[in-house]
Length: 213
Ligand SMILES: [Fe+2]
Image (cartoon, rainbow, N blue to C red):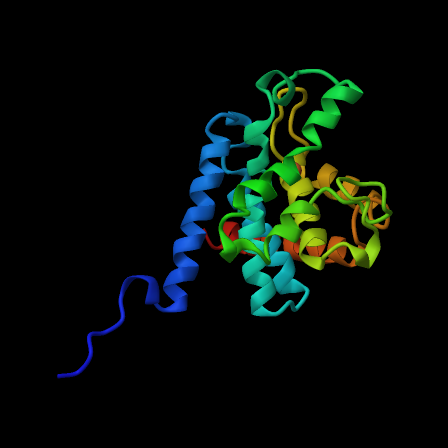
């Protein structure tokens, strides 16, 4: 008699990828349900970051990490007090220090899940600045994982084009100009160029759909 087919924990790796993508989305959902302003932010960041990574010609393995890190990047905000998270005014230095904990909190939340081990460095570094003045570790330039440099640009673009408790949303053009201005300072210039390409391609597709309809 042939041996039984392996099941359960021996599931094919593709299924494992799907399962952990769902786990990541569930964690993001848990964090976002208490923060209505950010609803859908993680999925949009994951999608845009994957488009930028594709534009840069990144290998499939990095695309996978960028997508997962995009979904997971802000789950640490679940540990930040609401009065700080939703403060409709400028944060005090102490409050900003509290916000700065969220990348490390996210890393702690996913630490028990070995599958996310190679995604953690991207989550941890998504607020590092290209010029070395970001947080939590003041990484600089190429010392910041490429996936995290991609996430930082996608995160900024989505945050700027979404409303926040303390301001209205920026237009697409305003957001792109702000990100262009920050190239080489907050963001990696070649990642900024890739964002501009992606947005331009998307608007061309949108325009062609309008012309056709
Ligand atoms: Fe963040």
